[in-house]
Image 1 (cartoon, rainbow, N blue to C red):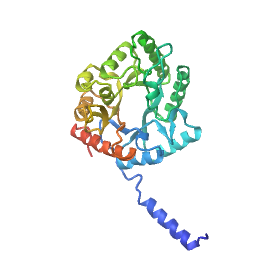
Image 2: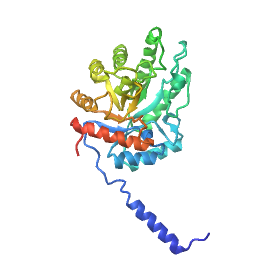
Image 3: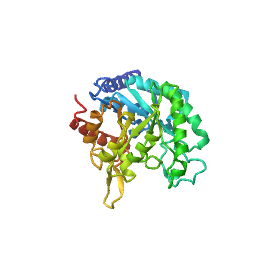
Image 4: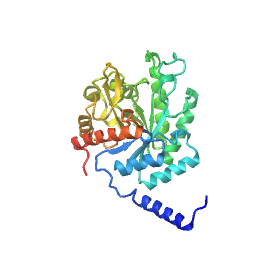
Length: 324
């Protein structure tokens, strides 16, 4: 089918008007003592659109990177890295951390965990213990590429009895943290329900056992509740060394009609986020509070994240941690 020059110009003009009507840069970053962020793939795997939503619709100046274009952060090609950096620059977004899958694998010599095969790796391929050093090297490279000084990690698939292996696991975390430290990077351990440090109490014990400033906590009270620690905030929170909280994930957990713990919007659930935000501020915390939606009750990941962000924003405002 042929297209006349007049039709082409009319179509181009309409497209230009549409793009002009999308004010990608006409926004002001949120005013908060924290680095208010969202994990990009909780919105969509389309990285450009995720960044547009975070910056334009949410007003964020920060974003956490985990996967884009259905590729985990540690598996991006050079072309994908270059494109990601262009998109971040376009939306004036800074990166809170590299949300890596480091140490989401079985501990060698221990009984095989019943959690590993069921876990969501967020598009990361399943890996072995022997591959973890290479993953760490790659994540350090990604941290430098994206101008961030933090890499998220875990502490291996959860064992029914971790005590015989805990000291060796701690040694591995220490080794990895010291490697990061040589590059000016901090390793942040997330308390994760399917891993050996899942609750606030377990996080306090792990940090106490590993004394290095290069390892800190990615505090996730929603994860702690999902592991059964219903008093993650405020009781377990009080046990944590506040100066070693380097990152915070924001989501919530509630019991459904059957009494099962399930994910929920940020402003509904066991975690009182207004009080948690206030406590973080009082502790002198100024790092990331990053929305990790997980709840999918909104229909699509993007719509669910929009609903959760509305609740998170309301709680930040109520805590005196967000203003226009």
